[in-house]
Amino acid sequence: MKLLILVGSLLVPVGMFWLQTVWPKSRLLFNVIAIIAALIFGDLAAIAIQQIIHDNTVFMTNIHGVLLNPFFLVAGSYFGVYIIYRMILWTSVER
Image (cartoon, rainbow, N blue to C red):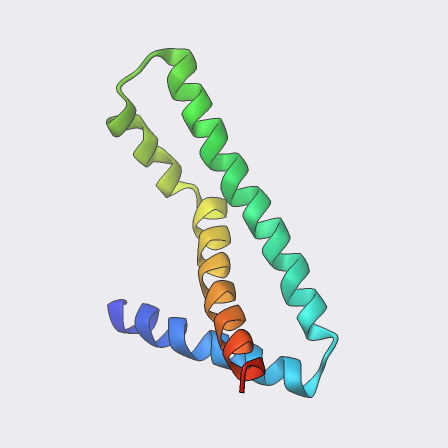
C-alpha cells in the first residue's frame, strides 16, 4: 500500500500534465475538480471542529474521526496530486 501511494503520487500528476498537453480542456476540468475537493476538504474539517467545540469534547481524540470520512480522504488525495501537478506545470512554464 505504501508503494502504491508513493508511485501514485508521482505518476498521477505526471499523467495529468501529459493529458493537459494532449487535451487542453482537461486543465479546466482539473481546476474545477480541485475547487470542489478544496471545498469538501475544508468544509468537513470545519464541521468536525465545530462539532467538537459544540460538544466541548477533547479535541485530539475526536478530531481524528474526520480522517475516517471517505469524502475527506478522496478530496485530500486529489488536492495533494493536484498541487504536485500544478508545480510541474509552473516548472514547465518557467523554462
